[in-house]
Image 1 (cartoon, rainbow, N blue to C red):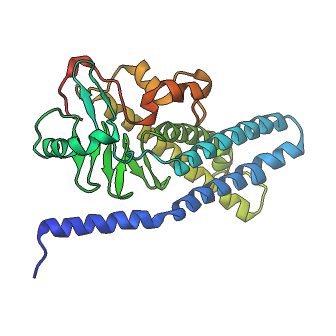
Image 2: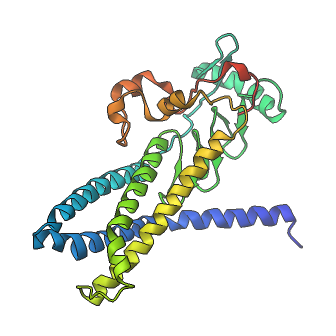
Image 3: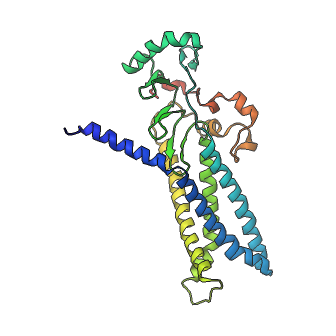
Amino acid sequence: MHRSAGATMAWNVFRFCTALRGLGSIMILLVLSIVGVTYYAVVLCNYGPALLAGGASSLAALAVLILFHFLLVMLLWSYFSVVFTDPGSVPPNWNLDFDEERGETVPLSSSDFNTQMNSQQSMANNDTGHPRARYCRKCNQLKPPRCHHCSVCGRCVLKMDHHCVWVVNCVGALNYKYFLLFLFYTFLETTLVTLSLLPHFIAFFSDIDIPGSPAALATTFLTFVLNLAFSLSVLGFMIMHAYEKKTTPRWMYDLGRKRNFIQVFGNDKRYWFIPAYSEEDLRRMPVLQGLDYPVRTDLDGQEL
């Protein structure tokens, strides 16, 4: 018997998702290896010796090293925050109760769950009723607003953006800020490394004698190429990500740049550039829990 086209496609997707799950710690080790090579080239091969040598160049070397280590700490802090923070799961027996007058959704009590489950599942399957009621056939549960099923993780993720192989995790409601900070500090760090190693890279193509062992010179060359590639890639990704959000027509969750920013980074400015939230923001901003989101009132009835 021959498999149908649909069955073959489903099998291929399953194998692809299984392969992504199998990467696991390999991607983390790859990231740490790139960081290690970069550290060796910048600190041990070039700017560390320049600092110890003294002279006028030692001040520039000190400035580069201080900025390099600061950005590296922030990059790794953000990275591991994305890796080890659960992006957000649907709470057990979670349900929706839509208040048409207030335009809000609130979880139902457990006593109401069984009564409304069948009716809302039918409403989701038949595409009737309010568009907020959605049902995941794979997880066999209702989905909150902006929640989507991840085939790699095998579960529904709150405010799922995408599954990132570099962080071996989904990017969702609870780690979206950390992911953006990871991109931000990666871009700054790789740009700093590229600019700081640019004179050494140019020297490869000149007649100037370059001090250092062949291994150190090769590592410096490789580090420059890698960081230049990552810098341009991350910049391109951030531009594409921003452009994609900007060109989405009439999106009900687009509250304007300032409010959109606060929805992700919180109200407390002291926490904007670190992968954490203040206790007050966590307490007073339900959006940070990934279950309830304010919407534009001029776009009623838009599907999620």
